[in-house]
Every structure is written in C-alpha cells, then in structure tokens.
Image (cartoon, rainbow, N blue to C red; front, side, top):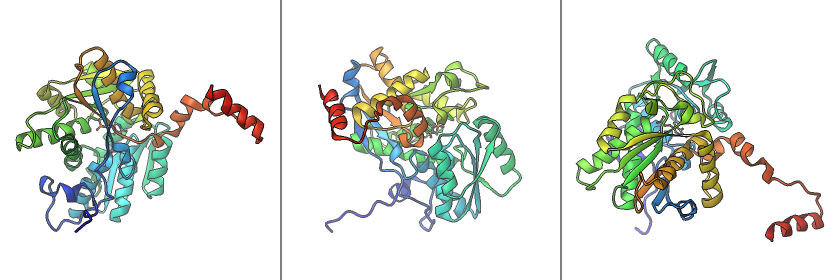
Length: 359
Ligand SMILES: *Cc1c(COP(=O)(O)O)cnc(C)c1O
C-alpha cells in the first residue's frame, strides 16, 4: 500500500497506552500529532546556545492542548452514559469541551470569568452550542462551583481533575520522544492549574519505565508573576496577568506538579507580563510562530534561564506552546497596532511607503 493510513487522533494511535476498550466509541477531531519546530533564530538572537524546540499545541483542532485531554474525557463520559459535561475555564477548556460535546452529541456547560476570557475562546464556546455561564468571579471560584454543582447534577466534570484528561495529555510527551528519538534534557511549560506539566511527567515516566528511552527531562514550570502560587509556595487569592489562560491562583494539580518537579529535579519560576509579551512577539516576528500570551511564558522563562546558565549551553530544550495566537486577537493588536499605516489608494503613496521601508 503506497499510502499511510489516515491519522485519526491520539486515542487510535496510543490505544494500548490509554484506558479505552476495543469497542469504545471514540470521540475525536484528529487531535495530537502537532509539529515540533526547531527555532532557528531566537536562541542566537538573545545569545543562548541551546537547541530549542517548540511543541506547537496551538495546532490542535480547537487551538490548544486541551483537545488531547478532552478527546479522552468526553470519550469516557459517553462510554459511562453521561449526557452532559461541565467545566470551569479560563477559555480553552470551554472551547474544547464545547467542540467535543458537539461532536459527541451531548450538552456542555461552561463557567467562565466575566470579562477575563480571550475573544476567540468565547466565540468557540458559543458557536459549538455550549451553555455559557459567565460568573462574576475568577477561575478559582468557577472551579469550586463546578465541583459543588456536579455533586448534585448528572454532569461529568471535564476539568483536569478528571483523571482521563491527564491520560490524553501525556501523549504529547510520547510524540516528543518519538520525534527527537530521545527525551529532551529540559521540558518547559506554562503552569496554571498544573495539569499539563503533571501529564507530561506521566508520559515521560511511562516511556522511561517501559524502556523506550533511557532518560527523562528536567521539568520546568513557569508562571506569570501575578499568578505564581508554585513560586510563592502558597495559593494566591487574587491572581492577575495578561496571560488569561494561566490566571489561576489555586491550582488543582498542586501535589502532582510538585511530584514532577521533585522527581525530575526541576523548578518553578515566574515571568513578568512584559517578558511574556516580549517572547510572544519574538516567536511571531522571528520564527513565524503565533502563540497566545500564556504559551509564550515557557519560552520567556527558558530563554532567561538559558542566559543565566541555569539551563546549560548545548541542552536540548522543548517548550510547549499551549495555545494559538488567534485565540486572543485583542492582546496581539494592542501590542502592535502601530504597525498599520493608512495611505491613500494611489500608486505614489503605496510605492513611497514601500520604498521608505526597503532602505
Ligand atoms: C490551560 C492552559 C494553560 C495551563 O495549563 P494547566 O494544565 O492548567 O497548567 C496554559 N496555556 C494555555 C494556552 C492553556 O489553555
């Protein structure tokens, strides 16, 4: 057969490593299999001699890594006979839950913090037909309410406290190992609820324990300065950051993430909003890779730690870019609105504007 079989999502690909049966009805949108892109300009630009790759999770079906977990969570919810899913969300979980629920033909209820979710994510949840409940409170309040209501109503929670979410998300580590043909030396992620860093550690451990690779990466988690409970060593009651996807003060996977840090010999650190946005612009402008602000936290932190020597020169480093830049057009345009020049619709004006800039 000259053709390879059609890629049909991560459950089909990693079926023997995931809790599904042969007759399970899989709810998939072809998630996973995202590109691992080697950065050509950025490390050198700022004087770092590391081998830096980004795992571009923004290319999942709804534009974030949440789809890896959601295909598992919704598949299992349907298998168990559930007719509705619910989540609290800073945006991407709601977009993903809404899409996979539509695909499955079940209801989705999403609780989002009023005014603090990026426009693209809200559009997705609405288009996919979720019931969107905007609460006058932050993500942490939404999470508490979801747990309380799910104890009384026939709805399945699809936040990352749902154990199937992490099972799906661990497959990103499998893909990275398969593409590099080894484990990276360091894996850096933005950390909000801390499910994803915990899931990656599960995946890396699994391939190591099964003898598929002979090393595991050091796990490094970066948080926004205004929402950095891991760095402070205590929950934060009023998290604030431009990176709305990680505007979380009470991470649900607190213990699991500390385990990943300790077992891997890694650390947590913080990035300011300015550092996060600078890294977002650098990736877009110098590499052609558009990620949302939260995602750029991984690169901002990795570059700083590489420059400081905490990540040694020559290291193979993977940064997860958790979500697509188009999710948050407002922040993107606010940063570079001045790049648009208005000219008359006349050859002379257009030619002049071009020649000026070619000098
Ligand atoms: C959910 C999310 C995160 C945070 O992941 P956690 O598993 O909650 O730590 C980071 N970036 C983006 C874009 C996200 O959607």
